[in-house]
Length: 603
Image 1: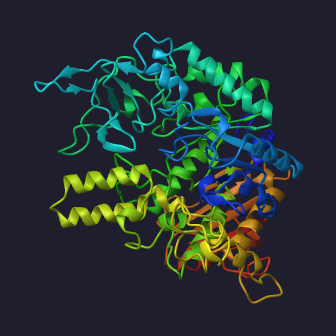
Image 2 (image 1 turned 90 degrees about the horizontal axis):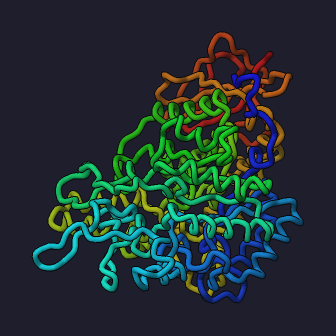
Image 3 (image 1 turned 45 degrees about the vertical axis):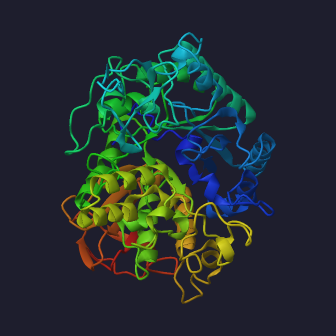
């Protein structure tokens, strides 16, 4: 249980909100738009849909002016909208329409780096004496080779292309600038107070315009170890550059900067402060950022679950078990309750493959059950819940081998395939493994157009327009329109569709928020290799307890309840259309493949 002075169960709008992430290029275009891209007007046109699903907050990935080298995460102007998405007036209209529905807007804030086309960087690279030179991180070459070519200041690898250096040479000034992600995304120098003041100005600009907070992209990378040492050699032979995370993740001044951000900006608004913090798993370090009395952020994305199949780099494969998955989830549920922090609940976003393909079974036979199982789990875990576009209809990865390499559009995937072809040109087995990694892990799978209907282009854009990225081939059977319209429920033989099940789960979460948002959590199945079962206990005096039982396998399983537990009734399950599952209430719970259940525990 939480301590007596804990604020864990103290209500806040951002704790109990259902936050829906939109990837703007792929969510919805608007009639007459010939670009093949989604738009702000398109987003606004779907607000009633989001409201009906049960969404409270819309979070959109970057829509700022950008050359789109990394799909908007390379920002050229923080206070303007990219023409491919619309105008500032369109955003103002979006904010008005959200408020009219009692909804909110959260923006992506990308301030570890800018675009190399941002006015700040164009000034910085113009000369060594420009006033904005030290707004970015410039270093002299480490050495000069006999042929006159320079060597980077250290051996850090690019995050989105580890075959390449994170340092980029500028011929004009003879120095390197740091771009951890790509050469198009130079890192800002947060040591410079002028940079921090400029960031605070950007935040004030949007908060005063009516935005309700920020998701802060890779915010834990803003402080680097100032000596910029070489990274240890952890990748195999043939890798000149190495992951340097230990020298730029949660660096020495990170918490100073976040505290200053809170003091100068966030404390002046009732705003959401959400940090994306990859590569960090240390409890104490995370709690420094999200502890109730930290004075920094409200919550962060903890990457344990979405890194479960990552070895040293993201574009690689590692086996994992259900026990590992359970241990990760249980750890952070208990940590935040016991130490007065706050969790985020998510398994999808624009940087991850589709969850049903990753954690369940995305075959035609089991996709629906697996997607519902994941919905049941997420909507019964403590913390703020995030739903990614298409997750609510069970969108999945492209079929293995369905896409040729040239169909992948993401810069990370393109760089990865170039590396594989260079290193293993004459090794068919390694080339095949490379394709398997792309089929399973590429970010492209989450970035395909939203599947609204069986109409041409899945209803994403006008029929005569070519979408910027190919539509998944299953859109005629996996789409919003068919799942919302399908007859189901107590008066029908049909099961709830994935969308209908998500809607019911979100309603259940809202109706019992004292249990599923703010309540206590105890794992009942740590040793079971396939079943995840846990008890959620109300944070209020009623002491209501609910049992969640999830079969994460494609085989039938039996779970035996602990002796101290007695079920009063079953409340919800992913195999049924009626309101309450017709299951025996004995201690032995027989589960179908990928079956999930919620039951009320007798007092």
